[in-house]
Amino acid sequence: MMESTLGRRALIASGGFALAAGAAFAGAGPAAAGTAVTKSARRVYYASDFGILPKATMPVSPPDEYGRKFSAGKQGFPNVQAVGAPGTAAIDQSDEINAFLQQIAVLGGGVAVFEGDINQLVGYGVKKPIVMLSEVAIWGLGWNKTTFMLIDGANCSVFVNKPRSNLHDVRDLRINGNRWGQSFPDGLNFAGPGAVLGGNHPANPDNWQFNSHGILMVPDYTAPAQPVQPTYGDTYSNFENIFVVNPYGSAAMTNKIGGEIRFRNIICTGAGGNGFTAGYDTFLTDVTVGSSEYHGFLQQNGSTRFTNTKAFWCGQVLERWQVGGGGAKMRRAAAGYKIVNGTCEFSSAEAQNCGAEGFWIQGESVNGQLATIANNMLADTSDKANPAGWAPIPDNYVNDTVWTGQATGPGPTPAHHPGVQLWAKSKYNNLSITSRTAGLQDGGGLGQQGYALGVDSTGGSIENNISVTHSDGYDGQRVKGILTPATPHEAVSKNWILANGRPLSDAVREAPQDLLAIEAVGTYIAGGQGYLNNPFPGGTVRIIFTEFRNVFSMEAVRLDEAGAPFTNIKYNDGNGWRGWIQRSRAIL
Image 1: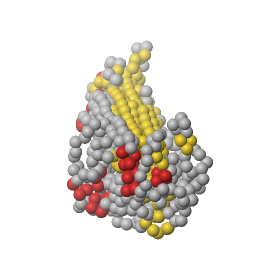
Image 2 (image 1 turned 180 degrees about the vertical axis):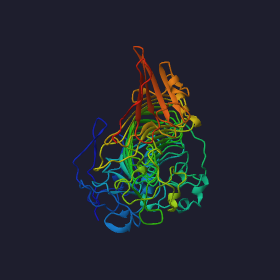
Image 3 (image 1 turned 180 degrees about the horizontal axis):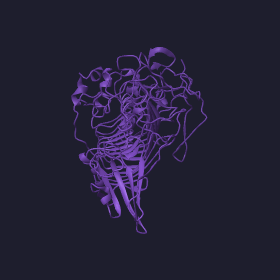
Image 4 (image 1 turned 60 degrees about the vertical axis):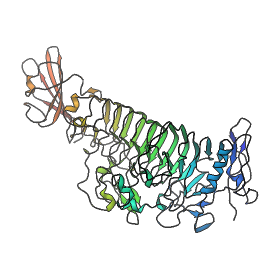
């Protein structure tokens, strides 16, 4: 059998790489894998020079509408096969790859170049983690050229950091996590070691030691039995131009290690856990997560920077072959971004068509620009969002009865999951929020993001400075109001909220029981039962009292209306108050 690889790359005098029109290898010439690595003057080492060639492949999906083919692992073995030998399990190349990297480290470090095949379905088979060493860069030749594939039953992460090392660099390659070929039976049945940390599925964030990820940064991957270990200094690691497909857990997990870790131009699709689980001082730039089974991004340890990031279709229309065999389909209440600890910066972050909230923020000092579009897909019943008529699922993944195939309670409504939810002691946040439903998608409307914002002021979500723009993208029916009905009345006066250009809490005063007793210009809030002359009895109402040429008028806007957002206007012509004039922005 002859293995076809890309032509050799020539190192140009300037120190960069140039594509050379070299001939493909024909099986003759490469030295044996065990050949000692000799020092290069330029510290650049090609794996193919030492007999390390891609020897693994995966089944191919039918072409999509654009004619593209992708790896399509499903339950059944082998998913990762030997090149040219369908049905034969691929060999494990991790030992020879790690030995190659170790020799480069002994020579003082350098760049290890893995060339690859012209088809991303052919790659390097890995059954043990590839260990990232200090100052040994791992470079491929592009997303569709260099691929590392996790072999069936590996049950490990593809790239891990050597304990107590730093200065890692990985770029220009693809990681295929082969989630369909991994198995964690002890964690899945909640009876094994995975249950020690709360009974959650091992894809959940704290169970890194029982999982497999694309990239894992932990204090010591060789000692997974110790769930809590002291962190150490920053790693100063860099990951760039990487495509991660179908990891069993996350594309990358950094929440158990020191920071200064940078991810640039990363795409993750089909993660079985959270797309990215980010921790101390992680920088995410131009990172996209699509179709992760849990949240798109999960931050648990603070100081993450999100720049030009996007999460879409998280928790939606997925198949989980590890549950009971076969294609068990489900939907779950997954957020685009779940921020559990604060000190987080956003710059142009977007969540679109996710199962639950666009952003769940449960921390302090979160700043930045949030765009949340057509989320809360769980409330949809359209064929696109729910083609099989699946049963409702829990509103949070901790109560994850869906794993046992049991039915749950009534389905979520538009009020369950706003575009952005501030929860518990989420304060001192400074946010600019764009919340909207999308235009027609696949001929229909998707996303029941009826409310822009939920504020848990009773739990401590106070003293936030928030500007919200909330609009409907196509039919005027799905936008309900700025604040969810569950948002307490006190949230308006305990935060600074600018909604569609109107202040909800700037110099807000509580309205007297008789609204007609208001005689001073200003903004008032009336909430609950017992208000006389209230145009919306029982609701939370913002009243703006104005005066023009000695004529007074009152505008009352319902803040928590479950139906359309109504506005009522009452005016005084000097001879007494006239009746309410009602108008609605909704199409009835």
